[in-house]
Image (cartoon, rainbow, N blue to C red):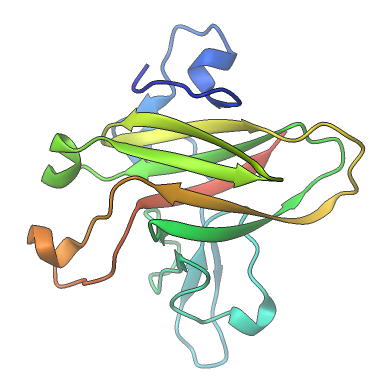
Length: 186
């Protein structure tokens, strides 16, 4: 397993005693759902991670509470999240686990600096450390209780800030944390 586990936030390899790891080097190695895409009235393509909710008034925005939607149609590397972001999803009835599919890109910065994340959900903070480049599926236990299905919010924070322009990757000067590929429930 790539990284330590802090209680309540489990890399999926720890949940299922499977021989295969839940960390993959390439997006093509996983069966990640395609991002949700739309073309606003302005005609520019716009994508958000699968499972993420965005207020209709924010559709077409390039930054939403720390989530950076993509302007590339069906972008398989959608979407960067700031080092601190408030994310939204729709929790289905009976769900007990929320799974985040994250990508730590294979850039030299992340080869020498392991990323860590903390998720804050219903007042509980949990996290995972030592995330090397690759795709990571992280399971977060939902708070027990009889909750109604519907929209929910959670905070995602990363330990490292990556600025592509500072690392000579491209000219992007945004402070970035990790790529959120999708949110799912079971």
